[in-house]
Each structure stands twice: as structure tokens, then as C-alpha cells.
Amino acid sequence: MAIDPIASLIDALATQLATALGSAVSEVRRGWPESPTSLDLSGAPVISIIAAGPEEREACAPRVVDSSTSSGVTTYTYRTALLSVRLQVDVWAAYKAKLDAVLPAIRAAFTNALPRAGLWLTQADYYSRPIIFTLEGGAYDHDGDTAASAEWRRTFEVSAETDEVVQTTHPVLSQLDLEITTQDPDGSGDVEE
Image 1 (cartoon, helix red, strand yellow):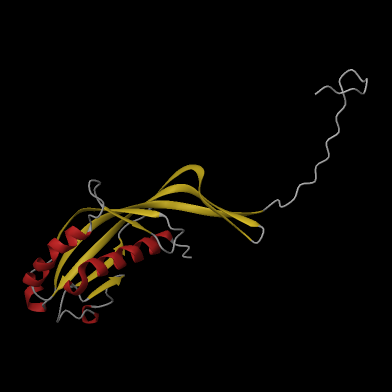
Image 2 (cartoon, rainbow, N blue to C red):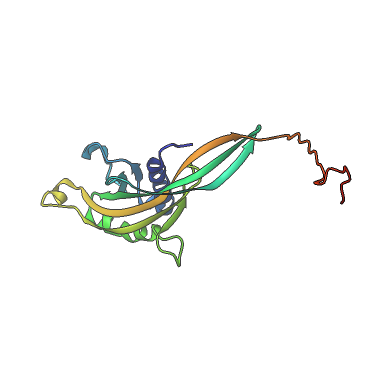
């Protein structure tokens, strides 16, 4: 079980994009390319995903969102905050035509829950919490050297929201021995039923 909800949501998005885009991209990376030479742009475009700013946490009253019992212990999962994160999704290609060809499929990959907007996923490695990704915008990032260096890039700004949770464990009460002694209110010993 992952303990970092941000790494978990980046993993979920990377897996979704790799699945949705298939051979239209050669790779979906978690993190920024270390150097331009680490990108193999000879084939299909490459996607990289990074956290693009500080996360925001909106605390909420703890609410049980899951519980399970095993070996005499109950584990409760509490939602304690709404976590919002800004992501940057970059699409890299050797030629602008290759880049432009994959952009409609990328935009389409961010909608899976019509009539609701956005991409709705579940974090497989963070307590099965839901995530909502929303494509916010973006732009081409190129200059006079872009064509000469064969490195075109399109950046998408993405917002992601999920729960931040805490787990607690409690022993299960398996047997309760209870003895009840009653006495009638007037002390006569006769109890009416």
C-alpha cells in the first residue's frame, strides 16, 4: 500500500494514459526527463508527468470510508482531508506533425465519466480512493531551436483531487460476559413482568 497519495495518483494517471493511448505513444514517464538525450523521440511521442506545484489540503471532519476485520482486529480508514494537486503533463515529439497527431487522443483520454467532466479513476495503491483529473489547459513550448533540435513539446495543466486518509486499528470485542441483577423498586422481591 502506497503511503504517498501524490505518487499514487501520478501512477494511476500514467497507467491510464499508457492504456488509453497504446501505440500512439512510445512511453509514459513518471517524472521529468533527466536530459534531452534520455528521450527517444525517433518513434512515437513520449509523455512525462510531474507534480507542478504545492499540494493543497482542505481538512474535513474525519469520516469512515472503509473498514475491515481480520484476526480479531478491525481496521478503519478515515477520510481526513481533500487533497488537490496541480500536475504537468508534457508530450514530447521529434516533429510537430507527430505531436499534433496524438493531441486529440490525449484530450479524449481525460474524459471517461460523461456526463460528468474529467477523468475519474481509483488509486489502486492508496486505499482505493477515487481521483478526479481535470484538463485545465496548456500550450506549446518551443523556440527558434525547437525544429533544429527535433524536440517539440506540448504542456498540459491538469488538476487532480483525491482524499487524504488515515487508518486506525482497534481490537474486536469477541465476548462480553454480562450479569444483570434486578431489584424491584418497592423492595418486596416481587418483580412484575
